[in-house]
Image (cartoon, rainbow, N blue to C red; front, side, top):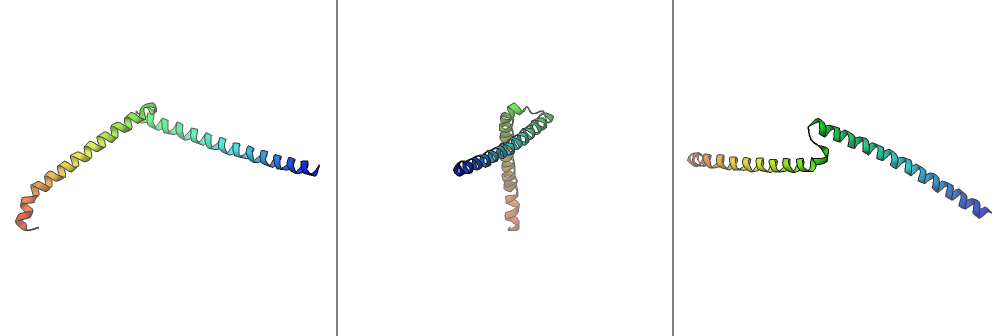
Length: 91
């Protein structure tokens, strides 16, 4: 019988650990659901459909790339425009 008592205690301890783990995971799941709901509400407040956010992000990335390209082009043009003056002053 002592062996069964030990096995029982071990099984009860493990069961309690599993129950604690389940409670912890449920808490994390609820927090994640709440965070998702807040993020979706934030998207909607900015007139962005959370279901199509991938499309919106892709559009923003393309716009960002175009703006960086335009900035690089404008900086190169400014450098070219200043080059003759820099030659004259020896810089």
